[in-house]
Length: 321
Image 1 (cartoon, rainbow, N blue to C red):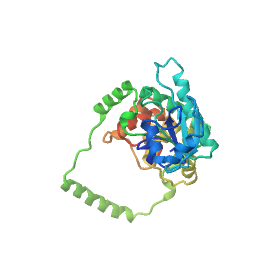
Image 2 (image 1 turned 180 degrees about the horizontal axis):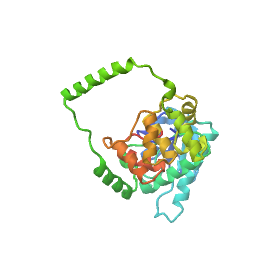
Image 3 (image 1 turned 135 degrees about the horizontal axis):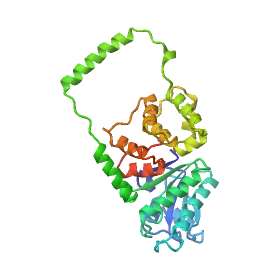
Image 4 (image 1 turned 180 degrees about the vertical axis):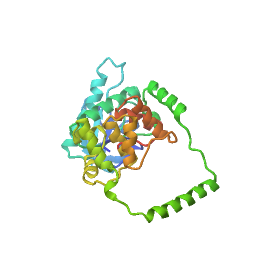
């Protein structure tokens, strides 16, 4: 997945580069900055002392030392002063400059904190909006695995209006699957076994089987007039994974991947159900994940980053995996 949000201590996430939300001295501080300096050890401080600090919105790189990464990219986020003092542009620049350095140092993966959202006071929902904007702009023209690491779901603040709408939709549509008695389940299984035995004795004409997920996906891409690159970028799917789906007619993706591709193609709910069926899945009202996905598709909201932010807020798996 090119971009994902995870609940994790950033000092323990393995990546080629870890981004440090540093202060302008680069000599360590509180929050993420202090945690990274403690995890990396004194070697990091000694190298930082040679860098001459860093300006807000800029970034500098050091070795990773004792951290599980090759490099640490230090960037200085803006202090929130009401939003009318260039904070948004400076925060965007933090992500942009950090990603440019990661690319320059040939990093294939990078992990970010939510920059400026701690003691610098940047509102979390606005900080997330800038992070997603900068990262998605970069991924439009580059391939890289990018992770946003937060300590808990409350660190990521999605629009309260959207959350209220999704909660209302879940309450109206979510229905837990009824529990069947052991007797009924056993009787049902016995009947299925009998039917399976009958079916096994019948010859199968495989030429008459329906198209596979891969075939259906490629047909839909052509019908929508989209390119492969447009689809896997919009689906937040790695190019190599998409290549596997394209080259193997019998490839069965994970449900999260199949849903992401349906979102990228902007399918309606019936089209989505038909595509998922090709991989053996469906969207039901017995799974909270499914109900949330149905909410976005029925409302024709196809921004995969917004969908994933909402799934994260409800402790559900992200799509595009």
